[in-house]
Length: 207
Image (cartoon, rainbow, N blue to C red):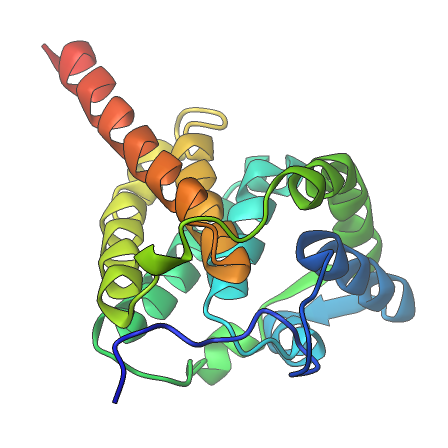
């Protein structure tokens, strides 16, 4: 079997999704309006994407939004990302969600407000990013990216004492998720560079 990563970004399984990021945002806004509270399981099933990317992009975007400032939210998001990343590193083709995670809920109006704040960013991403350096996408490189995301979110519970301190790792996770959705190798490289910059900055701060 080919080593190329063939997960399709189009939830309908045909053609290319020209606005994948805004499509995710719009769908989350819709379910936020339709329901008083929205569970993680409902969000996952509503999006119905086949690519690994949304499992990183969605919690990454939420972590960068105002919701990420609520106590405990960064840790919950980090646990989600770690769960997803761990399964990808192990080579699982289908992501499993435990019941306790699927039942986690957020208010529909709060979800809608947070996603609306992210909408301009989503539209900018859809305008400027597309398939580039697609040759970089193999199952091995996707698993490596997942491993990096796993390592990045491990210290998140400790970062909660500092407001928005988890935003940087969430930004990297978002970058890898976006790269996976769009098969954009340039974004994958940029996310890796951001990790290196963060590590160097962390070393200087500690020193």
